[in-house]
Amino acid sequence: MTLSSTARAPLLAADESEDPQASYFRPWGSDEWRGWWGPNPPYHHAVFVLAHHPRDLIAMEGGTTFHFVVDGIDAALEQAFAAANATDVRLGGGASTVQQYLAGGLIDELHAAVVPVLLRRGERLFHNLDGGPEGYECVDFVSSPSAAHFRFARTTARANPR
Image (tube, rainbow, N blue to C red):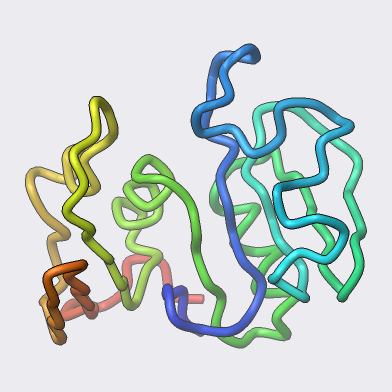
């Protein structure tokens, strides 16, 4: 089984804000909010959201169901693999989420898109990983004036085989 950024299977996303009042990285600011996409989100499969507090699942049009997981990255990954019938799972989220899965040895392939935009704040993708994804190599690189795409693949045995 593979956890990658290119597979078509359940998505893992992150509710990264520790502050209940924050909304910068927090997709669910309230129980009434149903997303920017309207009643039919673009996913059309189960989505597992890392959350800081329990919530009821949200079923939407097109087959998308949001499941909120409070038991950490391993529990979310197990549920996503089960929903994907043991096929590949896609990971989505911010730098903190990706760092946790990389540090846990749980990602087989990583696609990073870099867009040259100046922001006043943000997180470095490899900041808490001693500067880079150890055990991975860049296997593909495509660039244009608008973006650069890097694809990293695992070069070492997975620490936690699934």
